[in-house]
Amino acid sequence: MAVEMISKPAASASASSLSKFTRPLNVIFTYTVIILFALAMLLPFIYALANSLKAPQDIAANPQSLLADPATGYPATGYQRVFQRDFPRWTLNSFIFAAAVTIGNVFFCSMAGYALSRIKFPGRSLAFAALVGTLMVPGIVLLIPRFLILKQIGLVDTYGGLIIPVLAGAFGVFLMRQFFESIPADIEEAAAIDGASRIRMFFVVILPIAIPALTALAIFSFQGAWNDFTGPLVSVGSNKELWTLPLGLAFLRGSTGQALEWDLLLAGAVITTLPMAIIFFIFQRFFMESATYTAVKG
Image 1: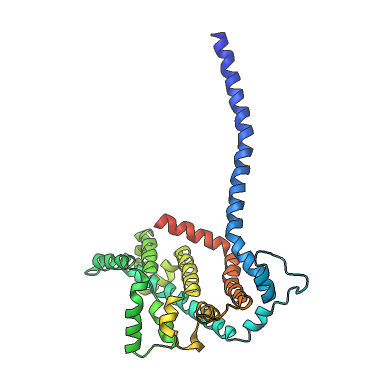
Image 2: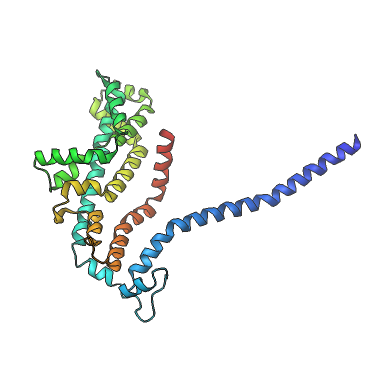
């Protein structure tokens, strides 16, 4: 019995010392894996940035090098040439498109989500089921019908044809409806007793509570619109004045059989990426919260 009592503290002390030894190793291993994955994600952008500053012959001779040839230095001719094209116009179009889509999605999706959550009307469940069903339809399938509708109503190659089809989306309505379902109905009942109408109740009472969901929706809407290629291609593909940055980048690649101007293309890619990168670093906390929120609610 005495031997057993002595052996138990010894085993406990051994396990404790082993735990103290392995815990730092686990932390080091975890951070090493995270850093390696981060470098793997950043490496393409680092190479694009480094090569965008080189001369064309330097890119062709040694694209893997992060440093320019001392003979050519960093002329950054791609950035000079890209602004001689219509790149400033495409940048403005992208900002207009992304801002309009973000505002439209926040406004219309929140209203639709609130109606599906709180207002009882015939066919509400069927409408919500049909809405969720549209999420299963690949977006590429809707491109030709969208073009035909825009052509019939005369909105091809216009700002209206670019923006109106994506002013609201099924995902945004679904997201807002799920959030409104989590808000207790007692809040609205108290507002109704005080004489608030449905519209005032929505804008004054409910929307301030829905700031986390609205932030998530705004972030995803802006990001999706900024990076969208197929939608603008169908809507304004034949009007160069209305192109967005993704369309402009495709144009910078040149026609079939033409040699790629890598300095020009990489400079355009870096400029296209920078706004989203800046927005991410400024609103990093909101990106993390929106990702966590949608994961929990989904």
